[in-house]
Length: 434
Picture 1: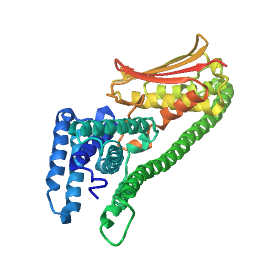
Picture 2: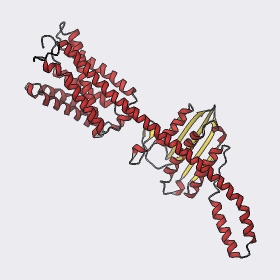
Picture 3: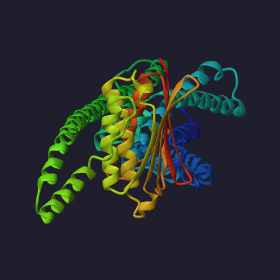
Picture 4: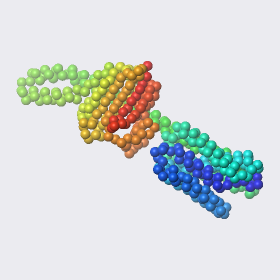
């Protein structure tokens, strides 16, 4: 075999494993990178090479344990570089291992085809292999970064790790089967065919992982859409309840004049005083009426304003509701309901009632409708992909309110931006006037 197509030298195998780890690490968010990673990664690469050369001196019988040690070293490289969950470490280890096998196989095969018989210059070999590794890794990096699958890779579960590990073991076993049978009666083809077969199988391994991620991403999108639809439906149901409540308010005021007649006719001062006190109490909960020129907004803002009054929240709004007449009822309920619910929830955390402040503005700006909601917040927020990360423990089931607002803005060709500066949380939605 060595006379026709030599085995990949362990130096280049180690180099491929280290570079594969680097490009897998580069796909993580920079916020997860550990501070000492840049200093330690070169030493981890050197250690990978030393370890490969060392196990290369072992008898063929210990080939599998030697590979296992090198895989553990790759896992250690990931561990010292990024801060992630255990499942994420093992899943990305499987990806890095399969990718390392692929780039090592295809690069060495091309080298043997182009340079093996024309030169034995070590510098040429190293330069060619390193160039191929970097080129293939950059292609892989760009492809992965453009892939929408990053959303599901942040929440790796045990099932995904098991599938990825089994895929890596199967791919590695099948891709090297030809070499294991080469000197036996089980002929698997000539050496060139075996190398081509190995490269092809490793490529299939990467595609299998990609297909698995695509399937999980489709499930993720369906769950996201279902959750957003549930939020929209909930907001619409709230609007219906608010509308019925407003009808009840109208009925109460209609009955008010009859109650005044009773008070006027009551001869006993104590009973008259009790009636007046009860009447004031009833009127307090209905003094939060907001008029904007949009019936839907009037209902929602009146109900939210009533809640704010009861909870000592200062809510001010300057709203031209007619500007949002073009938005469908459920979308407007979602936009207003989710935005105000988030603001109220954040504001209620302030023990100091003087800091419970919410401001809403809806106005026209240069051909756009500006929806601007500000609330005072002492929270220390972190952002990811333009959205604040929830401070609740069950993170998986929160954040759909802002996502549904983004969905509404995108539906009407608008934009949503969020900021948190000087203890003021700001939600801005710009919608083109149609």
